[in-house]
Image (cartoon, rainbow, N blue to C red):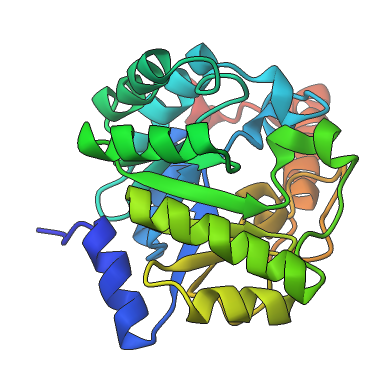
Amino acid sequence: MVKKVTVNTLKNIKSSGEKFSVLTAYDFSTAKYIDEAGIDVILIGDSLAMTALGYETTHSVGVDEMKIFTSAVARGVERALVVTDMPFLSYHADVSIAIQNCGEMIKLDANAVKIEGYSEYIVTLVKRLTESGIPVMAHLGFTPQFLNTLGGYKIQGKTQEAADEILRQAKELQAAGAFSLVLEMVPEKSAKYITENLSIPTISCGAGKYCDAQVLVCDDVFGKYSEFTPKFARKYGDMRGLILDCAKRFDTDVKSGKFPSESEVF
């Protein structure tokens, strides 16, 4: 039997000084393959708004859509910790509604949820969710759901004062029960400082090599999404090229009469 990754597994990895890996996935087969590859955490990121649904920002995806993708991914995973990104405005208005929305993801076999940002309300919500049996991954630095209030895609924590503020927020979220923290678009030096002063693991999303883990969007890693690639994303493959090649060859074979062959008909 495959040993399941849990929130305690991640804490133990941090304590040992080792690293763990995080990738997004949005469908059954992708989740199955990256789970088999040994990825430790699979995130159903709200980035699917752009990569899977063609929206311009993450703001356009809702709870109902995230439930569909969560269910599909969870069915493909045996080992990795499955985390669902809670979409824009699904947890901001009311604690009871937030708990219900997050709970729906757990019912669909997610193991945890991810929540962006910091406020007194968010800290309270993290505490209530944890008390309700719903593990929470926090997210500070650049938070895409707050794109409009941040004034665009801007690096966060560039000064010591700013890094101290992120650390203060992180410690409050940690005390409230968050089991890990994504740091997005934070300078490496600041992320190292924050990581060294937290007991929960940090996950770098463009925050350098000193965090306890690294996360990337699978479509960036596979070379599938070509509309935009962040500076911090490394392309490990060319799925766009592979898909184009396969589709063109199929198109040619159909139009030339080479498909189907005698062995491909009943």
